Length: 226
Figure 1 (cartoon, rainbow, N blue to C red):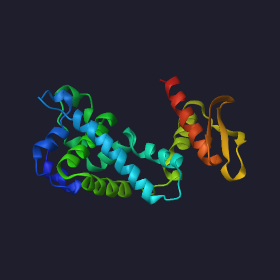
Figure 2: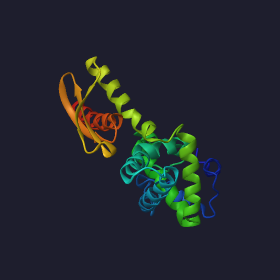
Figure 3: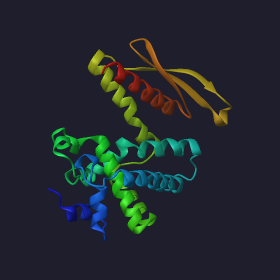
């Protein structure tokens, strides 16, 4: 199962120090003198910088707010799980039998942490440029499009799927207010489900405000249905 050479081929990176890769793939449940938590900490910081730089260069006309939203959509558990699944990291993580039996190889948190740790290990061994090249290539391969619309579109879709499944209805979005001058206007949109107002949010367009409101409503509704 744990063919590290296969993983390195998928990464497009060959470790000089295989022990570093093993550490990056070792979950704390495996009960070794080492685990991947420190490398995960390092990888998180490195990826925050790498993805931030990528977006800064790719979208020269975007302001800090839009860049921050996009980075937050990519640098998170869901975003890293997507990359980890593409690399099939779950096949290579060292786990305890208990964690294995608990479906640990498919847990988003475990996969995302392993991805961060592997990038932290590459950074230690080869520096920022290697992490940058690997991460940018993965992002552009895994995501059909990287834009504000593509990164935020899933919140409305996910909320609609949830409300249809549980209530047989779709959410309703209403414009509450528009703030600021025409050249710098912000829109406030509220999300209603079965007549109940669940959330409201601001955005630089009505579409972006709807996505932000959907994200908040999705979180609230998911907790209510647990």
